[in-house]
Image (tube, rainbow, N blue to C red; front, side):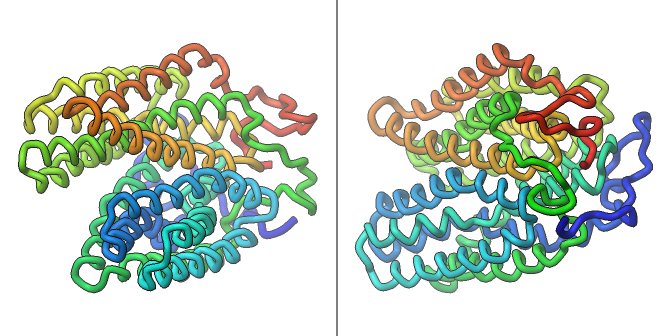
Length: 431
């Protein structure tokens, strides 16, 4: 087998009755070796879309062309990310990351050069496809490393919350950094910096072989690889995460349209920041609680709250009310995300978890891309605020699917055969 985690990396000594705090999580041996480079490597993910929009809009003068180029990048990422995760599970994160990081850097710089050269839109699309397809899936890889490092520890819920908060922080800092670079340095500075951070952070993260999950391809692992998509519970989680993506996409477009309609476009950042703050706050709290309820029950309750909160957005006609509802929606998203990622540990064999995480990340991205498109059409064709119907519809449909298929979220039983006759030890353990 390739690089594996040996017994020199013991799991934390937390017991089921201990309070899973962040301090205890961050004292886990070996955690910082992948957390720091992982944070640097995932930062570009949040910079990519806005960097493309600002650069292409500057060179073409068209927001339509800029949005279309960014959408091609996002859809390419959502479609190819699961296959990247599957390869990482089978051959190791290092083997997949190094060529992926190099390919993404080259593709991103090519897109930059073409935009500055005023290339035709089809050429920008041609460069956007490999740029999106090669986005390193560092977030899912970090989550998979937590699964190996913590094994069966109750700290897994805390780790899922920590990663959710990290994602939110990334999506607050990344766009701000990209916007500042594009507006104060040069229109291409955001995309160039994104490529540089991907290259440096990605290679440093890939070098941490000792904490990467065991591979499931050829070698001593002797585990037949099966796609995470074959697990019924993963398909249910994909549906729920598509609904979460509809909230992100619908909020982005509808908040921008609302603030422009009242002549205060500057309030868009404040309102979306309030939404993101609610997400981060509830994520921190969620990870600090020693939950007793089963995660599938928590997901059902949390997602019901999210659907109810999202369904009220279209009724808001004032800034204070919209800010309050946005804060509430944000507070409902983090528990759903955290619980969904936590369920992967009990549903999916260790050898397919990176792929499972990338399916969920891709589902959010795909839901967001679809929501941005539909919400924009509704805002243009119907009344102001009609875009808020997208988060309501997306979460309600996902909730109905979750209720109907909730039995598929039950944890794998010990010794159960998983797909094509592949046996595993007790659930949530590392083969």
